[in-house]
Image 1 (spheres, rainbow, N blue to C red):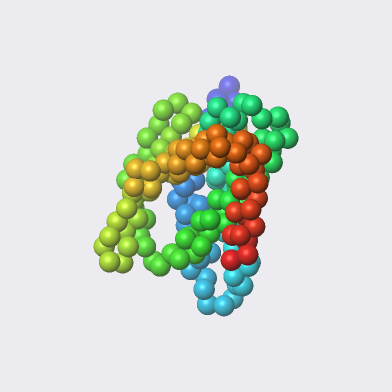
Image 2 (cartoon, rainbow, N blue to C red):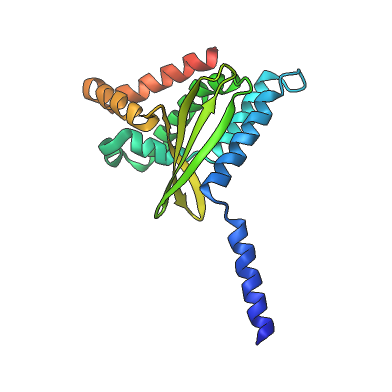
Length: 195
């Protein structure tokens, strides 16, 4: 009986260690991103570095959840294939819009302040401190899905990325319909790729 108890406790401990906390997941991803962008000595081409960044970020960002929240009530009006297409376009927009900003990293310091929980939701509070001692807040809102913590929103200086896009998308849908939004996203993604 003791042997079974020890085996069960050991199994539970190994399983609990396999599931990282939201803070651990964010730290690992940020560390990986910093490592990728710090490699500017020519060993890795810009294209390969950009691909590595996209791969790394996509392991923790839930683009489907971000898309759903960014469209708000309009999400429920879409057919399943439209949801998939919109999530692809939105992920591409985010990756192309923010990759350049991420690549401009210049030894800023990331300070993790606290980790807040509310059931299957968590928020990682952090700040970025620049070499000139300027700082800004950067918070990650996360949701637990399939025993993994995934980012569904980023809040910079109190401004939610998802809320910002929801306002923009709502205005476009109101004036041009959902098809107009898709067309605008396709055009924008094409422009960003050309840069």
